[in-house]
Image (cartoon, rainbow, N blue to C red; front, top):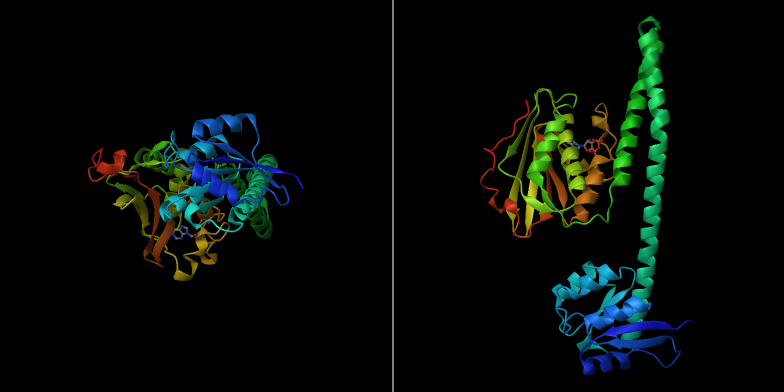
Length: 378
Ligand code: ADP
C-alpha cells in the first residue's frame, strides 16, 4: 500500500504533537507526516511537493481564521483539507466545510484513531467529488456539442418548411397544410429547446461570483430586449424602486431575469400583462420579486416547475421547453440564494429569489429610485 504524505499546518507544538499522536504512522506505515508552522511555509512546501491531505489549523501567525482556508483552497483546489479547530465553533466549522474543506477535527475531542479516519475520509470524499465534477463537465460538454451540432440542420429544416409553405402552402389540401404546420411548430419547439440547452451548457458554474452586478441596469436591458418579443406589445413592465447591486455572475443573473420576466409575459391571461419587478432588503439578503397577473400556477405544480424539463400540461399551447426555471434555480443556488413562487391559478404569480447582501452594495439605498422610478414598456 502506498504511503500517503500529509502536511500538518500548525504553529502550536502541543497541538501538533497531539495530532501526530492520534495518527497511525507506525502500524501499517500508511502515513508520513510533515509539519509547517505558518501559512507561508506551508504554501511554499506545497508548491514544491504533492501532499495527499493538509491538516490545517485556521489561526496561524501569518493568516487569520477568515482567510486561511480560502488561501489554501484557491491555490491548491485539488488537495483535500481537514480543518483543525480548538473551539467547537459551529459557524466556523460549517463555513469551512461550505468553503471546500473535506472534514474537521476538534482538537479538544481527539481520541483513538480519529485523525487516521478523518484523513482517509477526506481523501475518499475528495476523490468522489473530483470524479463527479469531471463527469459533470463531460456531460455539459456533450450537451453543448449535441446542441451545437443540431442547430445547423435544424435551421435548414425550418427554412425548407418555410419555403414549402411560401411556395405551395395555400394550394395544398387542408390535411397536408395541417401536417406542414405541425412540422413547422415542432421545428420551432426544437429550436427553442436547442437554444435553451446551449445557454444551459454554456453557463459556467465556476464563474467567479465576486463581480458587482447592478441588477437594476441588467433588468432594464432585459426589459428593452423583451419589448421585441411576440405578445409584449401591450404589456406593462415596471421596476418598483431600485434593484440592488449584488455579488454574482452577470450573464447568469441576466438570464434568470430574462427567464422570469419572459415567463410573466408568456403565461398571460386574456387581459394585458402587467409585470412588476421589485427588491426588498431582509437580514443578510436581498429578495427580488417578479410579479405578474397571468394564468397562475396550481399548488401541486409550484415545486415541480423548478425541475428541468417540467411544464404544466395545461400551459402547453404556450411555446416553451421547461428548461428556464430549472436553469434559474441552478444559478440562484450557486449564488447561495433560494428561488420560490407564490401563486394562485387565474390570479397571477410572484416569483422570488434571494441573493446574499453584503451590506456595502449600492443597492442599500434602494428605497430611493435612481432614475425617477418606474420603467414602463407599453
Ligand atoms: P418554459 O416556459 O420554457 O416551459 P420554464 O422552466 O421557464 O419553462 O417554466 C416551467 C413551467 O412553469 C412552464 O411551462 C409553466 O407551466 C410554468 N410557469 C413558469 N412561469 C410561469 C408564470 N409566470 N406564470 C404561470 N406559469 C408559469
